[in-house]
Length: 263
Image (cartoon, rainbow, N blue to C red; front, top):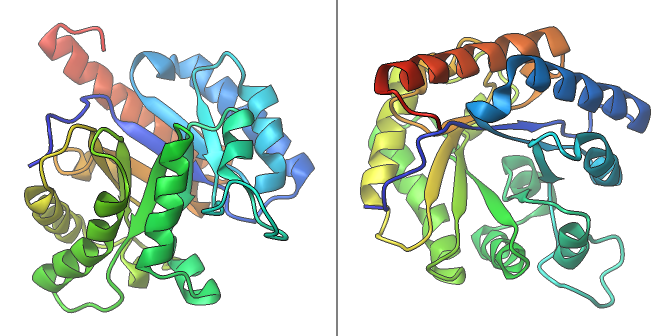
């Protein structure tokens, strides 16, 4: 089992490639406003992954807000003749704290396998960026098959990074990505529990998020099993974003009140 996990929910949002630069800037400003109004930094850890050309905008707009940011992909090389790639060293220079690797779309469209994903995770860790490693099963073959598929994707990453490195695994059943609804809460809970039980003991923290058509109303049903949601298109509308963040922050404050804790 992994060490005791952080209590504060970790909430991520991927903008994929839905927005242009101007729209991304507006969305980031709205995110900051909503987070400030909710005093979200007192209750949750929050990060956003815009498209790569907008990472510098995220740095400028979110500076001092407590909201972290990063990219949706990275090269496993720091420097060299890799035309069109993004260096992890450059992301670190831009202040990225998290970056996604291994998304199902990268695996399907660009042929990135577990070895490539593990190498990219290791490259991020070299530059003190926490990898958000996407994992998930392709078919609907039951809970045990889903756990086994996820563990096959997890093991190469754990083997590739130092023991002290923090890791985030975003569980996204491939069949749920882009679907009208996420997987059932009971199913997600069972798969996440199976993954967590099988994780090896490590020095760094391991957090498990749920993605895959996640939206407002889902996380409260999963809060006992996962460490937070990884939202996508269902919170690209800022009204939905406000609803999703409000329910998570409110739920966290209820726990704080009951336990008499500050964080």
